[in-house]
Image (cartoon, rainbow, N blue to C red):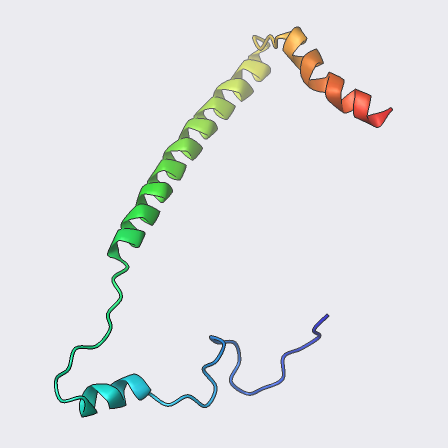
Amino acid sequence: MVDRIVGHRGYGPVGQMGRTDKAANVKKNDGGKQTDRVDFSSALKDAEKVGAATSAQETARMDKIAALKSQIQDGSYKPDLNKVAASLLPFLMRES
C-alpha cells in the first residue's frame, strides 16, 4: 500500500513530468502542415443522453419512494406477502 506520494508537482497525468510542449513546437516548425485532431463532440453528446436518462430514472424512483412512504405513514400500504416470501426464501436458504 502507498502511504504517500513523494514529489513537489502533486497529482497530475501520468507521463507529464519533464515533458516540454512539443505540440506547440511542431506546429510552429511544420510550415502549415495539418496535424492530428480529436473530436469528442459525439462522445459528449452520448454522455449527456445517458445523464439525462439517469436523471429521469432517478426522478421517477424518488417519486415512487415518496408515494410508498406516504402509504406507510397513513397505513394504506399493503405489500404482496407472496412476493415478500419469494424474495426472502433464497436468502434464508443460503444462510442455512
